[in-house]
Length: 241
Ligand code: SAM
View 1 (tube, rainbow, N blue to C red):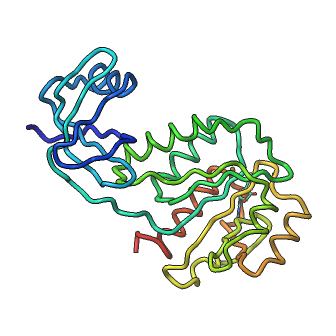
View 2 (spheres, rainbow, N blue to C red):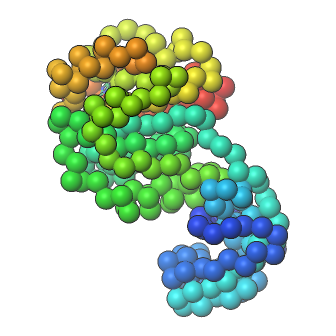
């Protein structure tokens, strides 16, 4: 079988000889878009059994069947990093989510802040983007997606051992993230286009598990700030070191 590059996330168990049903969306992607046929190979992964090579046994218009033949990689957990973000305009949100998955977040947590316009969030679309990005960046896991939650409520039940790095455009100086001990369970908080309210800032500054971080002297768009903060964390504390 030629080198297999096509990857697909499946919400089904994967094991040696396991038959895997391919639904209409999967059939369309594999057989129409990627031009796969009976006998062709596809890499399947779920969020538990790792990545498996599978052979297409049936290739129909609306469905198909593949059978797992060999595990190619075990599930490798991402670094212990959560991303808290205020929903932003659709195209920018899609970009932010895609980049967050590529940059290795373990959990995406949309937060409702004072200046957030939340009706923009479509959980089904969010999940589809997460799956597509995981397929593309060769992840063997699927990052978790939390429900939208008011920032204040989330902070009131925050796990004290997890450091929250708050991207605060009002802050100057070297990013404190660089001094944090490696392996710290972490989270990043990125604000909405309109930034954080005075009350939210006062609340964040008063919390012992919060570390404000600067991403330089210029005001970044939220999605840029997310990419910059994720790259900084991965380089300083994550799996890039
Ligand atoms: N507050 C500004 C405003 O009112 O127009 C801009 C908000 S900025 C577009 C969105 C978010 O990106 C901010 O809330 C912050 O989390 C992050 N951010 C942008 N630039 C930053 C910087 N230079 N340092 C740290 N965080 C930054």
